[in-house]
Amino acid sequence: MADQDGIQDTQKYFVDIPMASEPFTLRGSNSRDWGFKNRLSNIFHHETGKTVMLAIDHGYFLGPTAGLERVDLTIVPLLPYADTLMCTRGILRSTIPPTFTKGIVLRSSGGPSILKELSNEEIAVDIEDAVRLNVAAMAVQVFIGGEHETKSVHNMTRLVDIGNRYGIPVMGVTAVGKDMVRDAKYMRLAARICAELGAAYVKTYYVAEGFDTVTASCPVPIVIAGGKKLPEQDALKMAYRAVQQGAAGVDMGRNIFQSEAPAAMIQAVGKVVHENRNPEEAYDVYRTLKSETK
Ligand code: R5P
Image 1 (tube, helix red, strand yellow):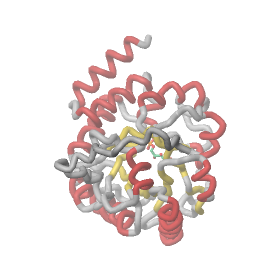
Image 2: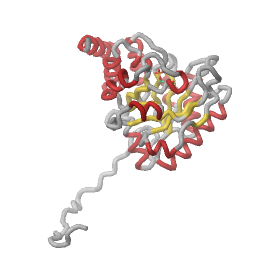
Image 3: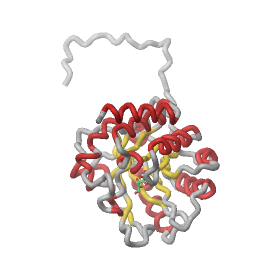
Image 4: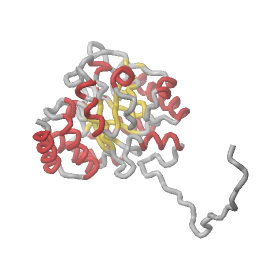
């Protein structure tokens, strides 16, 4: 208990200075509670409102994916350059140092492997474990138009309800089936459904035509997945175009960890996302950093 001797008169009321009330500017999130916003701030950088989320959750249905065979050796060195890490709880507990204090986005749905129908997922984590792991968000796959569309949407809405109870945001991950057209019309549909049903933010793919209509019609932030490995310059162009057309950053995996120089690539992506550097400038950064690491 504070020592009651020597209590000083209170004086510093600054009566002429109104108390600051900062708006929370992340798209669609201003009316959330403190813990929820605090977690989102551990994903989206408070100055730029954007994120470079490093996605390494592929093993949840693919097993040991190229570039992720040894997460300890290939991914842990990249952590200083990521704003957020998206992974499974298995990799988190076994391999990611608990001294990593940026946001963890926990892969929270799963079930089928690459050998089965992928849309047949279930919720794959208990909220108590997500709380125990101190995650910034939970990620759930939503298969709009897929065989198990309703079930996957229901997985998301259940996680949203549970997450809201504890102040943990949910990222809706739009999964596009092999037989579906990956265009703006589909992305608008899928992203908007995720947002309407409570996702705090949404991951889609970038589409060359009309991506700005996807971000405009989604009331919460959109981040883009990188998709299959592209030449570095093309991946930087895609990230640049997405951000210029309203994306709040990237959730990028293979185009970083399968790059010839992953540390250089993630830093170049950061230039595009946080500093609005154009793809040519960012590619120069990539080449310079790559040559320095040889
Ligand atoms: C799918 O395996 C995951 O949701 C990935 O996190 C997502 O596809 C992003 O990874 P990539 O940039 O490799 O597509």
